[in-house]
Image (tube, rainbow, N blue to C red; front, side, top):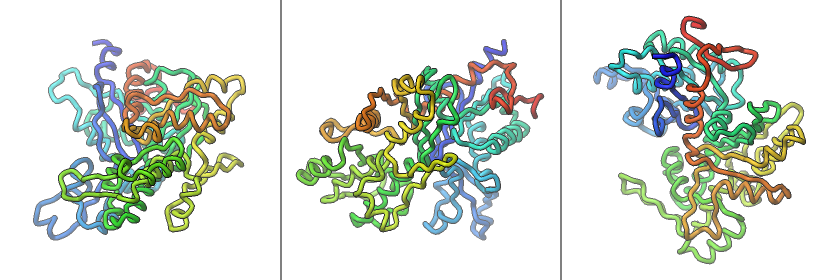
Length: 423
């Protein structure tokens, strides 16, 4: 088999999202597990039960979750805001175990031609150089243990989205759990124009938790996964928040927010507070709306400001305005082309609009269009067909397309980091 044919057969993508780790070889969809790990405490019970593991990832985590206090103590989400501190030993342990889990789940057991995957790992656009170094070393170590990695490379998540969409010149807005990356691209990300906002799905989760408390479900508000499920099932993006609230209060029955947790007897009904479902979508796009000020005073974390050189970008800036600031850092001649194709990707943009709410709610692309129109900017915004998987798909395409003899260069930050050459 030729090198190119082998690479097409054993291309492998990894998307290290803040909330989920998506991975796998060429397929319609990736495997997906939560980006977290549970450190099993050493107790008499675990010894008697013969538990020898100290760290578990994937579906197995659920079996070890005990009290809420234990979860807070032993459950580690390694990539808050898409960045891992160099010295955060437990976070790096979890990431290595997640990566190992991915290979163990997907390595062909009986393929005689398998010599390791060609792996493309996608990280946050603002990931520092030391994260690249750590990820390369992690994959080299796992190759030594498993024989899973013939070569590995790393690309920024927004570039992976552009590759998946076959876009050469565009602006990618990738919004996950931890942050929202605004990245103008002209063949390659324009690093000096990247704006990373410290907000994403976590803020929508946080306001959902506050809404649950206000509705009398305070005992459920501390369970992160449950809060996320409620958010995804009742949250709506309003075309205009004030108008949506007015209509929802006038007709509470039509806008009723009710959710039954699958497999349990737990039911959540916001009743007269059902208008609050619009806050869940709005906080991603406009957390500076006055309605959120009371929540900030009560303790809801205000999105942190972003500092770029001497410039401070407010954490609560409207998303449309932040896009305009990012594009404004590029050549004036280029800017019209960057506005012509704004690509939205990430699970944080995967909001559905029930037909009965189309007069007051909208999808993420329409919301961006409306916000940019307020700035007298005519744009074309589009949502990827599979926003949760776009990064992974782009990583797969890159694994197939990157020539085998194009070796990693720390100046270009491109190329293969290969077995027998680098490790």
